[in-house]
Image 1 (cartoon, one colour):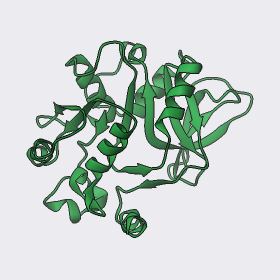
Image 2: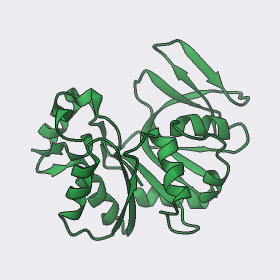
Image 3: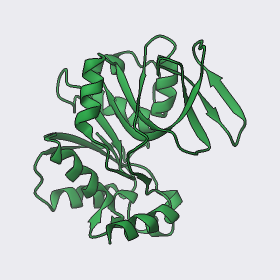
Image 4: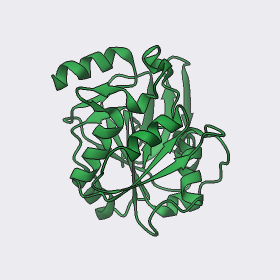
Length: 236
């Protein structure tokens, strides 16, 4: 699933007339970059959620021939955030039965190897695998000595939320890429609009949500103007 419903406020005024998903890096939109990366790893079934300028995203998807099936999860009536959007797509039966789901923010570009993530996820029988890096950020996910999610920390607000005990705490920055099993979706108790991180923190009290740590990968959050400029230079 590609999260593509956001308002793109950090990219304003670029997103005044187009959705964030259709902002271009090089000669391709962010959405096309992520779809192409997924299909390069033989992913053949993709769900894209839409809200902001939804018609433009849908028209773009219909304007091209893709090497996969693409289904749209329509949130035009109400923006549900990442967690609510994921749960809506699941309840609407847009995913393949009993298949793990790779989730990717539309504004993330990376050279992350999806095959390695799938191998790590399946080998460890994970309910959720969260891709993280050791980098500076204002919001950290906290993991224990076994790389199991145990909370989060917001540096700006000086808030720390610990969801389970730990001997050693390891702070990592979330990459916006994750792999989850259907079991996780069946255990989400939140409803309506909520972030996927909220759901993970609640579930971490009961389930082992694991970190996939790759400090060697190249990674860019292209949802803000300064990194969009950086990404355009890299692609040139």
